[in-house]
Length: 139
Image (cartoon, rainbow, N blue to C red; front, side, top):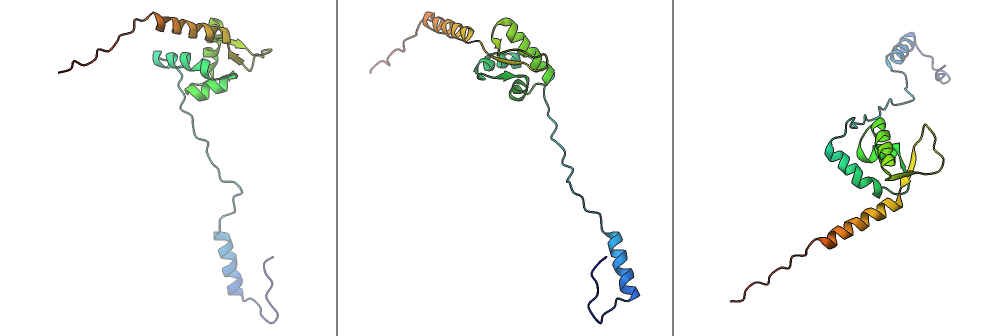
């Protein structure tokens, strides 16, 4: 049911046929634009450099460490992030935050271990002999 012709005007058969053919040529309206999500290119293996990076950066991540935060920050897939969290929890670097669920790992950084690491680093820096720069000889 399109527009009705105004008084005194009637559409001819040619006009009706032309309007029908134009309608069939038009594409139907799509309600959504099928946008594809960008595919993540996360690592599935850890090499030595990425392990060292995770080991140094994980304590600095803050109070909430989950599989998704580790996966996003270090660009590793979810199963590798779960293994990293379990590994560092076993070594004592991470402690569980509250009751644990088998589906969601929620951990925080073990403050005692971090304090011990900082003290060890400070002691190592204090033990290192300091080299004094010699003043340039005057001419």
